[in-house]
Each structure stands twice: as structure tokens, then as C-alpha cells.
Amino acid sequence: MNPQKLLELLNKVKTKKLTPQKALECLKTLPFEDLGFARVDLHRHLRKGFPEVIYCQGKSVEQIVKIAQKIRQSGSVVLGTRIEKEVFQQVKPYFPEAKYYPQARIFVLEPKRRGTLKLKGNILVISAGTSDIPVAEEAALTCEVMGNRVERLYDVGVAGIHRFLAYIDKLKKAKVIIVVAGMEGALPSVVSGLVDKLVIAVPTSIGYGTCFGGVAPLLAMLNSCASGVVVVNIDNGFGAGCAASLINQL
Image 1 (tube, rainbow, N blue to C red):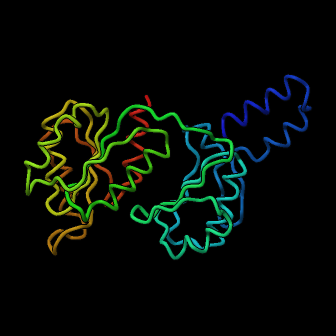
Image 2 (cartoon, one colour):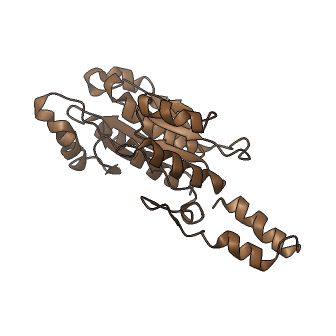
Image 3 (tube, rainbow, N blue to C red):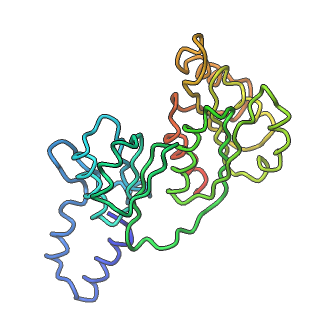
């Protein structure tokens, strides 16, 4: 449940516009709601500051729609990740106002009463190569939907380090930095060696045979000699965005 919606409910009880019994009925499904195929965590917004996110890959259109409807009914923003364009086109008729971001494979459905979101802090999202941008965009959009101010710096990998060094001022302004890289995964170490900010490293599955689908950059990042580097799973832009948001909004 959206915290603002819960406050409105409690105020109605306080001003006697709603009986405690009626309020209790409204709160019965607060912890979660069982849809048979999914147990939607309606309490997560109160606990974590952001509602449950729909991981769309592997779910049917019907399942995505029903979960989204429940989250929307609670008054929260709906964020769906890893949804292909063809699937979103089937979901769209149920939510005409939903926005789709094809590079990130994300859709967002804003609550009707959300209003203008006041963005906080400054998260910098960096990609080593152009091929890493889809994962970087998943991270950046996750951060933005969660209420963070985001800057992007793409295609500045170590093969041409002068490109990265030309934007050193952006690094200094950031509160948290997400670095997305495939191939040999060296960029997070370079970035962390230059700043006093936490660097969240995201290995991608971009690379040739011995990249092993992202295992090579993952191991390189885990073995970074630079202090202040933490690593998420391969291609996990969403996980990096969530972590950066929590840190940025402390």
C-alpha cells in the first residue's frame, strides 16, 4: 500500500469519516494478496519505500496484467522489468497510459495521483561500451522511477580512456556511481581509483568466447584492487539501480 494512501485512510478514521471496522476491511489484504499464481506483496512499499517490481520474463500476459492491476489498486507505481516489446504490446491495451522503454525492456505505470516526483541526489550511470547500454538503461531508469536524479555517461571504456577522463567532473558530482561493463570488466576499478564514492559494478554478458557470458568481467570486478567496489550479478541493471537508490536516499 502507498504510504500516502494509508495516511489518508487513518485520517478518515480519526475524523470519523470511516469506521474502524471499514478501515479493517481495507487493511485485511495489506501484507499480500494471493492470486493463485502469485502472492503480491502489498506491504513492500511501506517496508522498503518502493512497491514490488514485476519481473516479466517467463510470465504470461495475463499474469503480468493481473499483478500490475493489484499493485496499481494499492496506489503505487508499477514497474515491470525484462519485458519484450511484443509482450508489452499485448499488455498495453489494459494500461493505455503505460510507458515502454525498449532499450531497458522496462514499462512504467504511474499512479494517477502521484504528481510531479521530486528527484533526490545524483546517481551517475556509466557504460564501458555502446553494447552495454541496455543494462545501463535498466539501471538508470530504475533509479529514476525510484525518485533519484540520474546522469548518464556512455561508451567511455578503457580501450579509449581519454574519453572517460574528459568527464571527470561528472564523477566528482555524483553521490553513487554505477559502472556497467562487459569484455574484461576493467572500468569499475579505474573509476573507483579516482573517486571517494561507492562504485556499484555491473558485469554484462557482452564479449567474445572467453568472456563466458559475463563470468570473466564478473570475476574481474570481484577481484578489483580498487577499494569501494561492490558487484551485482551479470546483466543485473535493476539490482544495481535498487542498491544505488537506497544509498542515494539515505
